[in-house]
Amino acid sequence: MKKDIGFLRSKKQERQPITVLTCYDYPTACLQDEAGIDIVFVGDSVGTNILGYKSETEVTMADMRHHLKAVRRGVTDAYLLVDMPYAADRDAKRAVTNAKLFLSDGADGVKLEGGIEKVPIVKALSEQGIETCAHIGHNPQIHGSKAATHGKTFAKAKELIEAAKALADAGAKLIVLEKITEEVSRIITEAIDIPTIGIGAGRFCDGQVLVINDILGMGPPFKHAKRYQDYNQLTFEAICRYREEVANGTFPTDANVARIAPDKLARVQKWLKSER
Ligand code: KIV
Image 1 (cartoon, helix red, strand yellow):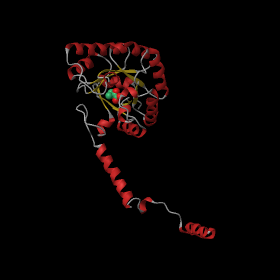
Image 2 (cartoon, rainbow, N blue to C red):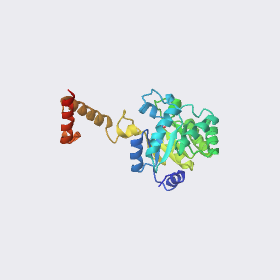
Image 3 (cartoon, rainbow, N blue to C red):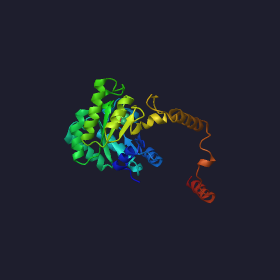
Image 4 (cartoon, helix red, strand yellow):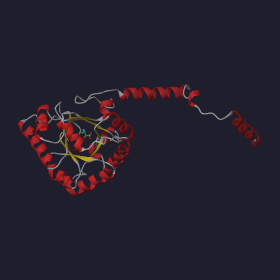
């Protein structure tokens, strides 16, 4: 069953947690879809996690479209969300043009970072019928990758709650809450009708998102995340074993080789002799 915004909203109403993971490639998209992840999300974290960039701000529309198209090929049921890269949503006209490119590549919705200042952009996208996910709290495109927790003071809590309400009123269909105190995330989740998706925002959001690299153990550990396997260790061991086996001649074995029929081989050898 194809998951749409109606489905995600009904999960909020029925208090069933929405599952979200970042995804950057076709094989991982196939696995996430098969595992029943609700939202497969092509985040601009592709820049630092996959492309080796120093910052999310280096990610381009071309980068995002390339990875989006790969992920699209692997997704059947999940809602496919894609991030607006840095400055791609600088003004409403640019945001609509870029969002339409993503939709033509197969995205179901677009996410953009920023607080109350992004209300006019969300409004413009919504007026064009483009499903938009807002993203408040820690915004890597704005604050850099060192994440501090938001919502620790009265003024900051008020600012976040007002921004969430205004973005929802402007037509956002989802909202990511990143690195926000659990209490403030809970207030936001209860105050708005649209699903909240938390990352480092506590237990009371309508859903949770993590970066796929972090659950697989591909990068440094983070307090907000959980490692379900040690990808780096497993992959390093596999690479070392392969290198050793090629170097010492134990790979390939008889089981890995293809053969020519003896009569055909004899013909080749006879022909070679006649050529000498
Ligand atoms: O790009 C990303 O990975 C994100 C998540 C942290 C929500 O925006």
